[in-house]
Amino acid sequence: SQTIHQWPATLVQPVGSPLSLECTVEGTSNPNLYWYRQAAGRGLQLLFYSVGIGQISSEVPQNLSASRPQDRQFILSSKKLLLSDSGFYLCAWSKEGGDSQPQHFGDGTRLSIL
Amino acid sequence: AQSVAQPEDQVNVAEGNPLTVKCTYSVSGNPYLFWYVQYPNRGLQFLLKYITGDNLVKGSYGFEAEFNKSQTSFHLKKPSALVSDSALYFCAVRLPNTGFQKLVFGTGTRLLVSP
Image (tube, rainbow over all chains, first blue to last red; front, side):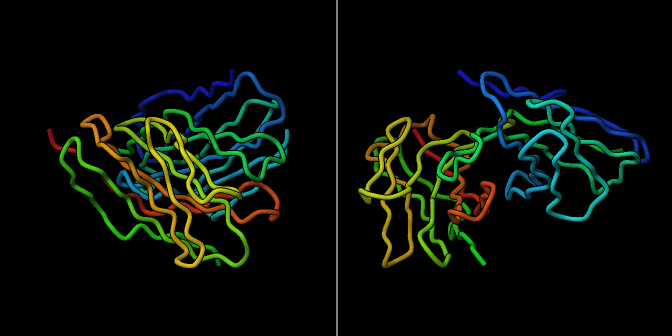
């Protein structure tokens, strides 16, 4: 069966520090991968998606970047964190080419910026 | 532009009673519709989806949803609520054949089931 892992679960970082959040998927090949941010426990905002290694699309301009160095690894990064980067970050995957396939989510990283 | 609305911020129901969480959508074409549930400090869990066919779809944990094309709705239902059903519920819509699977999520409805 497929599983998705995100780490760390929680992170407290000072303003201006760098960030690296990692997400890995097991049990499937060439998944579509997604990064979301959830603010105040409500709506989800899609940040980035990837349909293959090295292929990253950004949905909104922001202080963050994403990379996919391996088929089942998706990394969210920042060079200098802002207070507004605080939130709950969720990684998700779906089957390649599967329009009707659901997305499956990791358990998220709660990021607090001080 | 495709969108999805969840008109209720919170739904309160007593344990054992039926529950309904509402969702309406606005898309051109035939949508793919999904329901997810989120427990505190966890990711979203897939409950069920409507792609085509029977308007009543059954999903995990005894949940079901009814697709109504004329009313552009996809309400989530359960015949008998459990306290453990208390969580945040999200409706999402995907327009088919538009490339990668981008989902548009509603703002969520908090379900509170009282003992």
